[in-house]
Length: 315
Ligand code: SF4
Ligand code: SF4
Image (cartoon, rainbow, N blue to C red; front, side, top):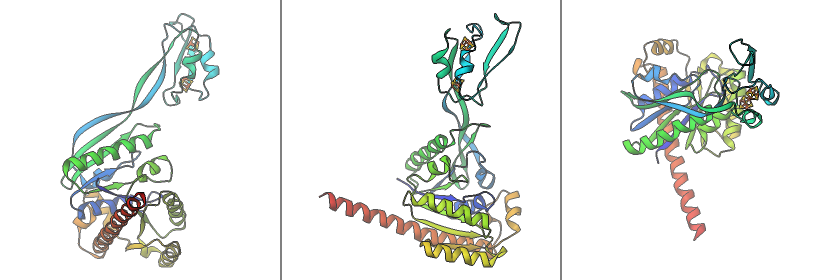
């Protein structure tokens, strides 16, 4: 199996995707995955053309057959999600049209169970789309979830599974995954089974708070973790505070990346920063990649050692 490096930020606005874009440009023999399915933007940096497009069907939702419906109101009373609506409609048999609000329906099936006239059907619903793109930096797997759709964790799992099988068929040894913000279901679906997590943070109190929540989440999965402090020079005092804080937790700081107004220009140009210019920022991104390679190597060695110990224990 290919090793998977996941990059998380805990909150938006830390410059995570820009860091991911540069790591993707520096790494060889890899596949890229954008698991931020609510706001995917890695493709804006690494470019490419969509080669395959797939529907994401997460489940079914209720639909009311107006011709069968006797307007008894039973389903409205039983729906806990307030998803069934009705309005006067002279064109229907009973002068009232009942329908299901697809954004509110959770597909629980209670309405169908209690409908006395078998007027409720279930149809699969397309909740989003996912794509395989060919970019000059390699294969990118990404997605777009429909507006107000849940199930982002399920979609993330589809993307990661696809990435593993594509890495195997293309003979790639590394998967670079741009993770979603927050610590909810999509973040959990992104880190489960990953080999290493890099957290991108910045020196602000809110980023420090979000970084801590992310570390707490990752600690439940025992995944080796490192941190890079982006825009470290906007508040040196807080950067040092974050570094001391991480030292106490035993988490390495792999890089300090300076604030650089050229980052926005690189994004507008649709280029990973390390390809856009050669300066202190691009050099710090390169040194981040070198540290990550060492960390991935030692995480891999640790896994091999652990497997060997478990194997000996079983004997
Ligand atoms: S399936 Fe559940 S959520 Fe959807 S309309 Fe029926 S009762 Fe409401
Ligand atoms: S329970 Fe069935 S028949 Fe009654 S209003 Fe709902 S859909 Fe119509």
